[in-house]
View (spheres, rainbow, N blue to C red):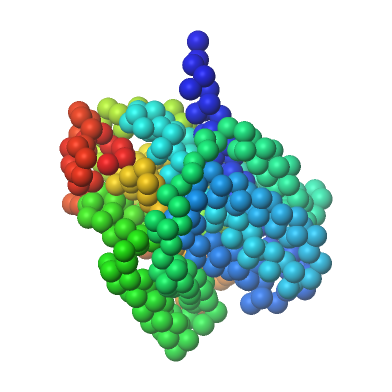
Length: 487
């Protein structure tokens, strides 16, 4: 018979996964509906990007601060506040009848998304201290993140084609309300450390402005290019702000982000690996959808259905295999196996023909994408391995920030490379389908290179924690101990 403790923790995990799923679904649903939004609200191509960019800037810029706020005032409070803000902003998005309202509401959505997403992993770390249980919980949470995007593309196509684009936002209202009611009831109450334990106002301004400007600079490269004076200037300012933040944290009595966390090879390595991995896979997700629609002629719904096998494989691996394999072979080996599968998956895409057969040319990659279910679960466990109970929120926020920056960087870089290659091939007389396919080939090859670099980094930097005894008080994060435990 299931004990009350197990039932309460399971209910809490369901609430955390539901909140994460709503936010991730929203991101992929919006991308499918962009053409309909453009037609209805008369967006120019340049202004249309702000329906995505406004969200990304707020989301990516506030994750780290939101994670630390969770440690200080209580992660449950921050999670619930984020759900409320996100749900209310979704209503405003759905009611929008002009460009300005939609863009402003999307920015507010990004704020709510950051508050909710930043503390989720931190709550899992404290809810599931035993390594095997934590592995299972992280596997479920990782599945929600990995498969939710694919499900969102299908749902976005259905809602946009069957009703209208407004319903891609209205669908969040019942989901948000139900998740909010569940979270209030089942998430454990936390008092937090108090604002005095880490109320570094200067650090908060530096890191938030630095991250927001970094994301803004990256997303604007599609319009201005990587070598434009505006890009280089804003990039330099971003680096200066973030460097100032690091210096501030080294000297502050109550730092927003304790730099001791980076002494762990596993924490630092896992965050770098995630940036590389997510850069490749976010770019893959966008570009394979563009290939399916612009080269093969699939519709929005057909594109989502074409990617469902990837979601199914990721679900199977994340939920049924990852925790067991990690418990038996360790996070490091499981991560390497997952990365190797993903390298092969993207290399196969470099051979896509302009007139592809789905079963022969695309399905193998969708099945190999199941390696992401292994890789994301393992890298998440390693990325949270240096988190103490008092700073699990900021560790979660840091890990989510690395994911968001990696995603923005990957889409910007791979899309730019694909466009440049396509333009060059078209100028040399290739037809549209062939030129587009050549551009995608280059982007997929670069993505495979990023994953290969992540594999090398995992092989050379990461250490496999032992599973024997808990670390003594004050031990460094990479001391022999249970993986992903709070040191």
